[in-house]
Image (tube, rainbow, N blue to C red; front, side, top):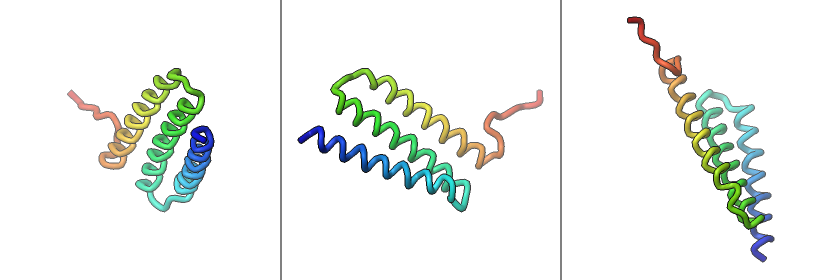
Amino acid sequence: MMDMMLMLSLALLSLGILGSVYRLIKGPSMNDRIIALDTIGVILLSIVAVLSMLLRTFAYLDIILLIGILTFIGTTALARYIERGDVIERTND
């Protein structure tokens, strides 16, 4: 029964990624695309967590942390690019 629920959650999360990919491609503004990219990262993290539960292993926990860190860094860099027009500040000394 638990395996069936995990498979159902994988299917629903996959549908969520499809919706986010649509928003990533079709999004009218850059903000919509960044939010869609962040959502894809979070859903991918969730898929790996559910897959880890389904396979009953702790081997994927490092991958979950890596995806979370990369999603955070990517979202922060894109938000800074939208705000300032540059990701890394360069000073002319």
